[in-house]
Image (cartoon, rainbow, N blue to C red):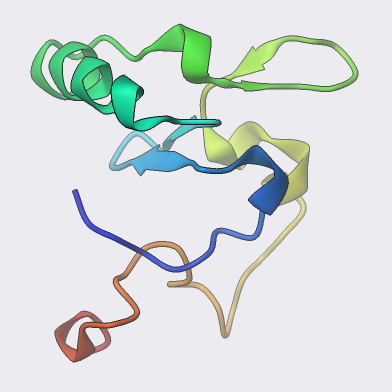
Length: 93
């Protein structure tokens, strides 16, 4: 786990983003972290209750690339935003 910059979807925060699957957890609290670590990272079972919920359909959308907000974007200059620690120069190199 690492601290990163903004993902651009502040209204859903705090968020957790798990690579390489691209799982996007929303409204994550400190109390949720042990469950994410145990269930998702150790057992390979994503925590469905923390998935983003589409406001129109109320369907859970686990992958960030399938969320309308992100699906229509092609980040060029900010492609690493939300993926690297903005306070560690090594992440930029």
